[in-house]
Length: 162
Image (tube, rainbow, N blue to C red; front, side, top):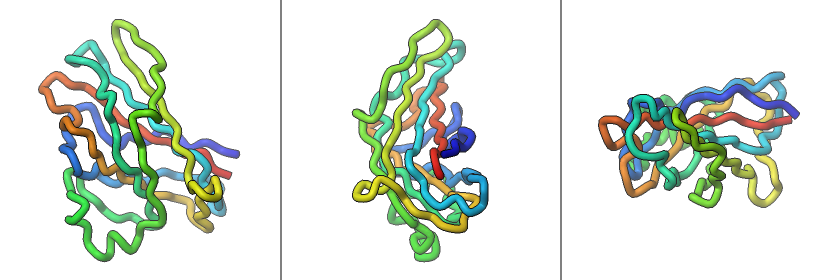
């Protein structure tokens, strides 16, 4: 099994409103013939040095996986996707508040990490012949992500695959 690097879905200065997508991001998997995604690791952090409040504990939504670049812009609504973008969706996975585990609270950071099993029925998501998987997160939390001027929350993803 292999683990991709973390890729940022929401940067510390990016606001994402309820029921809006993050920008789509590319996650590189190697070797090219990686065929099964097993787990999506998600990380939510905040830098207290410049941030206000705590980490958004309701980072709920749906991770969408694509077999080609869907070129989704941050802030796009689900009904704003084009037919061409929808055709590239190969899977989706809900992320709920219960998926998050509190890792640490310090003077400078507050972190949560979660893992969602991909492919609920089989325990895997088969994506043959891809060296890149594109991901976008449809945020459904009640409060806008990074809603306050001082919020510094960051949402990242990485993939466990074989």
